[in-house]
Image (cartoon, rainbow, N blue to C red):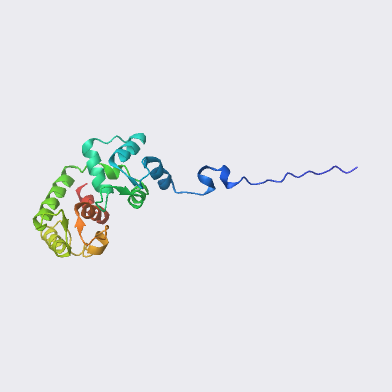
Length: 184
């Protein structure tokens, strides 16, 4: 008599049995959704503080203000998912939020002075002509290297696409081009 060979067929689980409905979401989206507690599509300062604290990085009020400047790149007052995801994908995301060291703070202060002096209407933003003047002043003071930073592309830096560059957008650009790296 031949033995009956029983084969076990593996039936995959329904996607509804998996967390998040079976779809794969980036961890940045999972974290964003978890800490967007009011579900308004953006992260507030308190929500950012909670996220950092829960992950072992307590931010003082000053550090939170700096983190906000770094992350809220369009200066909208809220951190949307694209800003959050850009920050999250950086392996040194929490190092990125640290307060500037003394050299960085001096540089940041001088950049702010120059920006304020060219913001003739005191709006906290720069139009295209004012931005060009700021770049020229920064180059004259050897803060920007004309050959390295020729791509002072207004439209690229204007992340809010409102025809103006605010301080957050400018600082985000400085971080992207490595301006603060020379202060380490």
